[in-house]
Length: 94
Image 1 (cartoon, rainbow, N blue to C red):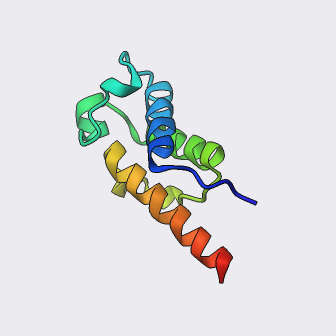
Image 2: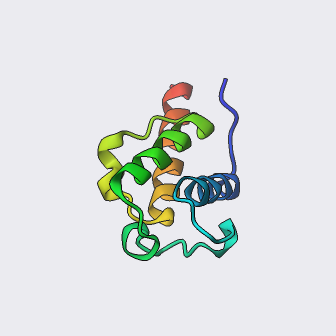
Image 3: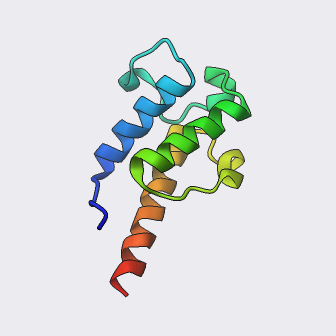
């Protein structure tokens, strides 16, 4: 059974993964949630795929690799993760 994570926990974990995988020289709370990761933080597609892979593993979700192009900011990632987790919880209850 999955544990329900708060939005704050999802945000914190996602920020930690982004900083670690993209090797950013900032603390997680210093990352601009709305900055384009490619333009502002010089992420490449491989880096973003690695972020998604860790997010999937650590948050126990299935965020498709094909969505990497649509998730350009941390805020977009967090909102999509919350949506997926909510959808999974709803389908589990049915």
